[in-house]
Amino acid sequence: MRILFVDMDYFYAACEEVRHPELKGKPLLVSSPGGKSRGVVESCNYEARRLGIKSAMPVMDALKIKPDIQCVQADHDYYDEQSGRIMAFLKTFTTRMEVISVDEAALDIGSMGHDDESMLANKIKDGIFNEVGLPCTIGISKGKILAKMVCDSAKPNGIKILEDDEIRGFLWSRSVEDIPGVGRKTAERLGKRGIRTIGDLSRVNPVVLRDAVGSFSKELHDLASGIDNSVIIEHCETLSIGRERTLENPTSDIDRASDTLKALVGEVMDDLDKHQFLLKTITAKVKYTDFSDRIHSKSLSHPTDSRDVLLREATSLLKDLMSSKKARKIGVRVSSFTGKSKQKKLF
Ligand code: TTP
Ligand code: MG
Ligand code: MG
Image 1 (cartoon, rainbow, N blue to C red):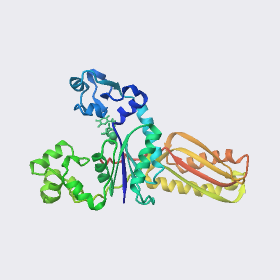
Image 2 (image 1 turned 90 degrees about the horizontal axis):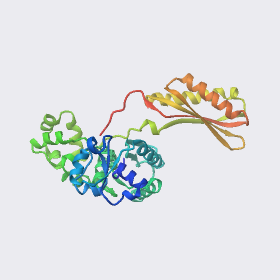
Image 3 (image 1 turned 90 degrees about the vertical axis):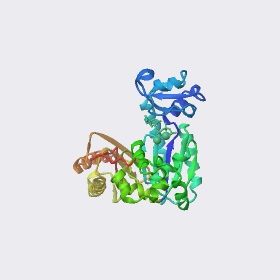
Image 4 (image 1 turned 30 degrees about the vertical axis):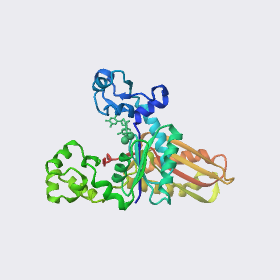
């Protein structure tokens, strides 16, 4: 498996620099509501970081370091919109992608026939910049956690590719805190047992490790040995499930296409059940005998997993589309998913 991991550089602050270019070049922070008196730093540019300002620090403390720092209150709707554009662009490079947070995603690029990883990374980096004007960093390795660590190590504005035979060299000199999921507390517990680098971690007796960090120990020991079996969890909001089929006899009468439609709905719902998703948006598509095509969508007021609802709504959408011309192919696609159960967070 090859995973390409993208994380945007100083994301919120960079978004603000794009719409207010006059903020560029000088220290800038984006604060949570509460501003200068009660806010915390959500993101800051690298000019601010050089002074020691960082995320999660009270804005008051940042002001002690740099009293005239430029300070903007967070506008999450705007960052979500930029994030959506970035994710939609990334999705064009792979069929398997996990949106990990507002500014990071992991793409499975192993099975896509992209043979030159460096060229692909440059293309994605330049593409994001053209799309939204924002810088990012890309890391590539054999698993999601390794690729994230490689990405972190190449920040800001970098690209780094780690081959399998370089993994141990890369990992062993780093601090255990460089592993996603290892916070200060876990690092302290490991430190008490003399485990400070990932190299130390790879050599430690598994019993000692279990004693220190419990069930996390296997994952940590595996990673320290260069084993990364993390999987891509496709994020339901960015997905859609669809099927289409050519009709035996072209027709403009929906009743004569009803068997085909029932089969398509059945297949779509089987897929949806496998993922344990609820759907909200239904899209019908028709390809006419003159080879033109049209689509029609509808969003339901409540998410559903009912076959009857999907069949009824798809029938009504297709009926409209087929009233004018003969259809030779019909399709049904569902999207805007929510999970039936909350998804597990991996990092
Ligand atoms: P990060 O990717 O962790 O940070 P960043 O993009 O600001 O900087 P870089 O990746 O270059 O190190 O987080 C993405 C966004 O999430 C960040 O811009 C703001 C938000 N965020 C918070 O609101 N609070 C936090 O404590 C952190 C770490 C991030
Ligand atoms: Mg980031
Ligand atoms: Mg991030």
